[in-house]
Length: 143
Image 1 (cartoon, rainbow, N blue to C red):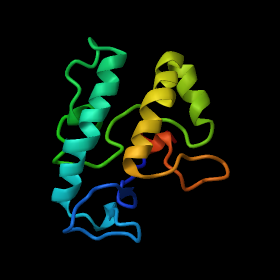
Image 2: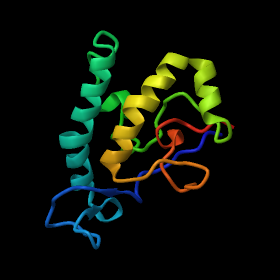
Image 3: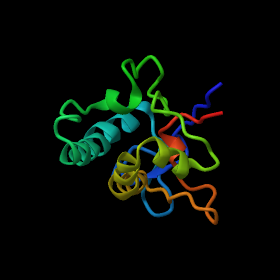
């Protein structure tokens, strides 16, 4: 069975007065209501990700939208991530991704992943930062 990860524990830099805020004044993702989460994704995350993907390959990503990451019926899954993106193992994640498609993996590592992690206000996974955001935050986890 494939695992699903939820993006409920991240801090997002959203200047809302009506949500819970952390000590630094940023709205805490876990304390946002569904409307705040939706608005941040629509107004900030999706436009930036679309820009990156279209710049990389305008033909392939011409129709980049919410469904590109969340699947064809994101509301039915309550916008859960990961939705359907190719599964990657927790151990040897990068090696598996590179074996599948080295060019796409490099694009994700160089352009998509750093920007996405920053937009979430998170840190990147590393052996010394095991709680950081990793590829399997978006990709299904292979068994």
